[in-house]
Length: 234
Image (cartoon, one colour):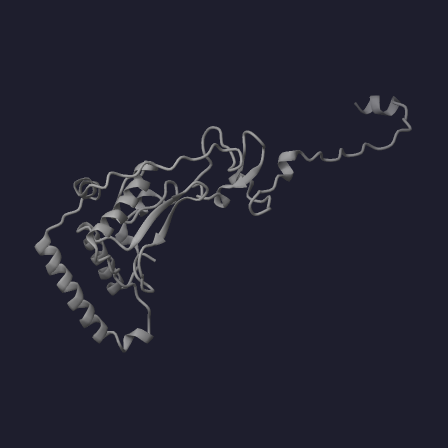
């Protein structure tokens, strides 16, 4: 090689120039909602118009990049409103696994009001020191509570989601070992109030919330009554 280089003739040619990088359309793609092009691993491309959108900019938010074709809200076919869940008390009770006894419910209601009065008297001094989670106040009208639970059942059945009265996470958000309510670090009173809310839901006393459907936003939750600040549903 040294001998070949010694006998070679010099060539009057300019030094090689590095090729300019050619930017493709996908490298300059921006999200149609936020206008940013970062976090490309969470950017979705419409299979019809090539518009881009982040998974967290969609409404409703996409938990992960969907498998298969995806269409942006402009190109997606209109979403049909889900069929209403059969508003029959027996079906609602079976769906939410409600364990209801009229006498137990009345007794629990009395205990709740008495505990609330005792707690208010005891926490007048402590109220300014810290804010704690309070148990929700369910709707007094039983027919209204049935409608609230029916709206939630409609959303769950339409999205093929199972009902759970425990602490749960979206898929891939946390390891299965972390999906336990006892791992939540909460003060003793907050844990007691959350347990009280869970017991109330098991009796069919759900929070005053109504699940509604919108073709663009998907399922959203709106207040169906007055909700005090720092109560559990919030």
